[in-house]
Length: 169
Image 1 (tube, rainbow, N blue to C red):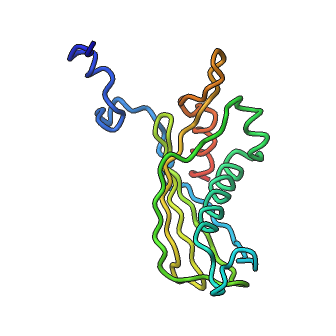
Image 2: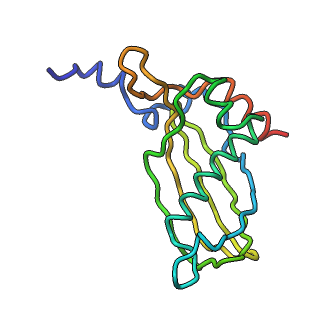
Image 3: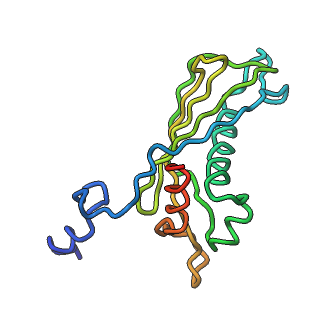
């Protein structure tokens, strides 16, 4: 059975809603920087970083972004907000310059929130030169109390307000 046209309009994706109906604070300017050393185990036989390691670095950078804004570890976040995490649902990366064992790189991560999802843009650089870029889309999820399955859930106001406070500080 197909929903009526009026029901279809009510279920419009957030991105299609007029901006006046969105009541989310703007935290698009919030970013975090961290230094990462490329270790021996990150590299392939050619001596450059093995590309899946970048995704590990970006995942840890997302966790660091939340830790800095919320003032608690991811482990504590899971307990405090009673949620199941923020799994990755889409990612894309561009590898521009190789990094090697011993390189100290800077990862700058910037976040933009939707209702239950958020986008994180990572830029990894060495000595001021861009080496890699990555975009992630993640979803705030909770466990369904009946089935145990995960399902999307709006990002809590407490989380959004802490990001806004950090962004305006």
